Image: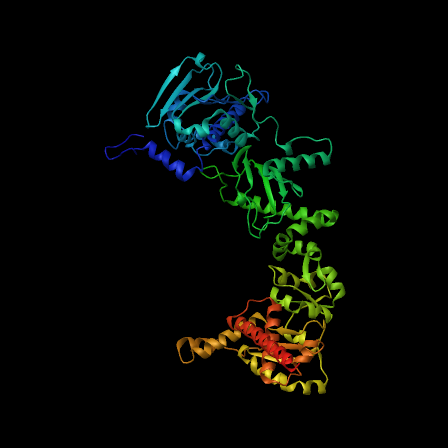
Length: 616
């Protein structure tokens, strides 16, 4: 293109661009070696396309570091002088756009021509020596780039590089020793390239020019052959433990031929909080892309960590995450289906494994079952729930209770559990995440099962009334108790129920308390704007009920008290004790009542004791 007088070329500040890359594109300077490895792999892929009949181990990559230089050498397709001027001297131009390569772009890891710039994160000078395999007897070409943005190119005799390929040599800066020491270069080579399909070796100059130490001596564990299925399973589990640092509860093989994806999912041996997503280790064409790629699986799959290698997933510009596109969405759905299939297989053929899995990850499975009818059908009968019969499955619980009652909160369950159990009621704690919704879906799995929400009327209907004479004898006490507890909108009744050790039961739902609070605010704001709004929302506030147990000796003594103040104090104390047993948060007025009633009863007991001593 010819520039007109009005045209101007952009001037690029290379140092500023490198600073931008280091702070906003790449997560760490260590990616320089990944970028060099990636370029080498892509060059080998292009060479393989030129010479498809060459032996599989004919071309490789060699890493070298001795503390003064870092060198990456490959037997790839190489660059001609024209390629060097076109690709290395133009920021943003990718060699993957070369003739005949654009159509094969899916075979390459890199899609951006800025990878070589990452070397300026650790070095002020980059030296490239390359010879093209496309032209017989091609000369060698040398390119030197500097951190100030300058570069030089010259042609050298073919003897300067006897075989096709490319060698990139870095002269590290003094502040980059953390990333360029020999041991670190070798470690980074293993980290990024352990699953590469081309042979990669490392040398630090101490082997006398020998072949170097293999960086990826074995193929991926799922690509190897094993004598038995058991040996394969153990090898995959050992690899998962090596990568993640825990012994998997089980390993799930992942294989999606459509996108060239293989790998394993390791089931975590310990429970994790719902919604806490673990990063997964994702390789693209063998090159490590990310160790924190949580986008590869749906949110509900937080009970596994994956290692995968894929051919067709698209990396982002930094090549440290996956690009969110239709392919990734399809892969995510397919992997989710593999996890569902594993759960189904365990349910059908390995009850012991399923039991261990559900014991550890029941919350994850419940979150999945809420939205997945197939998992609901398979696993709802197996999932544990807290019930009045202890921790048991819904299937077993429904066999002994014609109607399954479910509470709306944990505090409501704890409040009624002992008494409901004694009354023969089957109650499930629906206060935990997903539990109430799942219990209500039980009839879908077990036809004939009946599920209902527990309400105060259901419970009180199963408490036996006292005889008329007993109720009349206690009428005066009950009237004093109602008056004392009117401030809490609480009624008082006398019943008989088991266990007899329970003196009282406070029946009060969270919704009822909220409604009474709202009604109280409406009364306080009467006449104002908020009073009109709250008044419009006001409903008939249901009252709490303090149900006294006539079978309890303490209650029988209390209802016979003929001293009004002591009767009021005893009623307040019974209310406070019942409120504590409900395990719900206490209001300030209730805390004050509990303290006051305790002190009043203590004072009464001391006065009585003093009187008895004086009389004696």
